[in-house]
Picture (cartoon, helix red, strand yellow):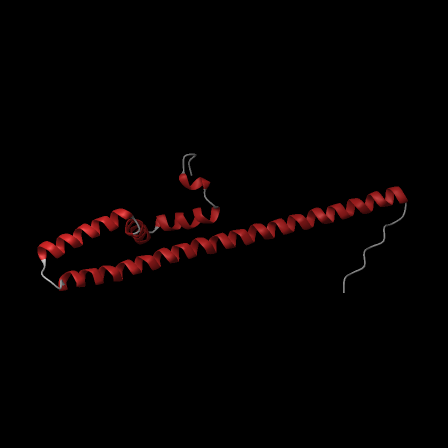
Length: 139
């Protein structure tokens, strides 16, 4: 990834999922359609197209337009679900990444705590001259 890569500023799990989606042609098409279908130009184009269709091409009650709109709704709902799946993938990847980071931090903190405990015991031995009592184990 180059220095001007827009994904650089994103969470590592987002980058991973985005790279996977970019590698799959079908997912790229779905992303383009979903991005356009969720935009105001999509709404404006449809408002104008439906008005023209109703006024120019078809008489009441517009059976062909109804069929077209129903089919479009079916496909758009599919793209909405694809978008929801993408979001779920991002969330799962982020949760997995956060869990890994949390586990690494826990391991590091445990090592630091053990090192501090060992140093404390060493200091106590040097200052007091005897072994420090071991803490009692919790039941």
